[in-house]
Amino acid sequence: MDLGRVVLKEGKERKVRNFYPWIQRGECRAEGVENGALARLVDHQGRHLAIGTYNGSSRFQFRVLSLEDRTIDQQFFIDRLSAAKELRQALFPGIDALRVVYSEADLTPGLIVDRFGGTLVVQVRSMGIDRIRDLWEPALLEVWKPDRILEKSDMAGREEEGLKPRTEWMHGEPIDSVNIEELGLTYEVPLLGGLKTGHYLDQRETKRRFAERVKPRQKILDCFCYTGGFTLTAAKAGAIAYGVDIHEKAIEIARDNSRRNGLEAVFIHENAFDYLTQDSLGPYDWIILDPPAIAKTASKRDSLKWAVWKLVKSALPKLKTGGRLIVCSCSYQLDQNELVQTCRLAASDEGTRLILEDVTFQDLDHPAPVHFPEALYLKCAWLRKA
Image (cartoon, rainbow, N blue to C red; front, side, top):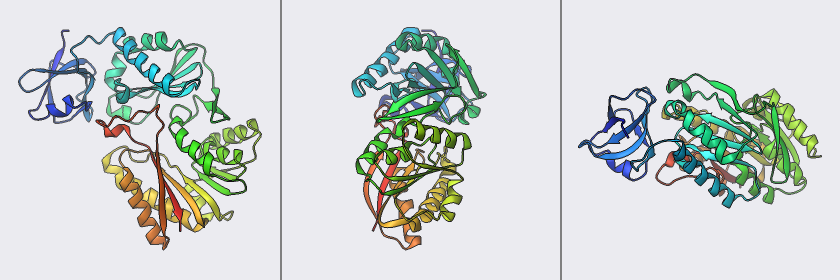
């Protein structure tokens, strides 16, 4: 395959051979490669390391598609997408609301696909994957045979890649929303007006464990409730459930989801940070804190720590003794230890003793290769107020 070359600095080849998929700025130089193009990665002596995509404007200048010296064509993506499909079908038989392609974790860096029944929602996160859409788009159609495909690439990270936000229907008849079933509950997924791809599929395992532990008549507060996931899970278990979210449309859909499932829950349109300081409905048996990522880069890690500290410190006075907090971070920039440490600092400042009882992560349709720690982004600390 006749490709331009990206030359890796001496001493950096080991991480590539150990399956790490990113080459960062300052670790390589390009020879005859345009931004967004396919390229061959070689070591400082010119020996083959990988085939991937190059973007000199990105923090991650080279993204590995294959360690093998093979042609990147439509069949390549058919093979990759078929392997990802087989994994999900083995792990989640009969479930049709799943992440079916998870970027680097499925060896398709920059491409994310969520499936909601016959609808696929695609996120394109790199210039390289954007430029070869004529290869993966027909492969996606062949492997999944969806009714429709929506591209919803509106994440802030596209700007660094030199890409503008894009939201458009790639295939099939446009629709505004779709209904899915998850853990015995039916949800409306807002495709165009919702956050991310419309539904947070990564919290399925945490919601499943929560459903097993919450008890009838317990009182729960679900902060950043979005369309009602934890709130309705609690209501289904017979708990007295309150959900808070700043997005008015999400609250409207959450109320509709409550009616759709024949459940009683109270949804409040409010900034969760403000609500926690004003709330008079407590004390609660459970408080769920699941804020947005806030920090996508290391430079913003302190802002994320402050947000988690503020939320936990504000929540603790509203929690019964013996009550439980579920504190989530969906940013790789705050790892499990830092999350627990931040909760500890907040509890110390509030004069409260906390017991760590459990930690949950994203579900298995969001694979987390050990060679690529950035893939393990979601972690939820389960804490008891002693």
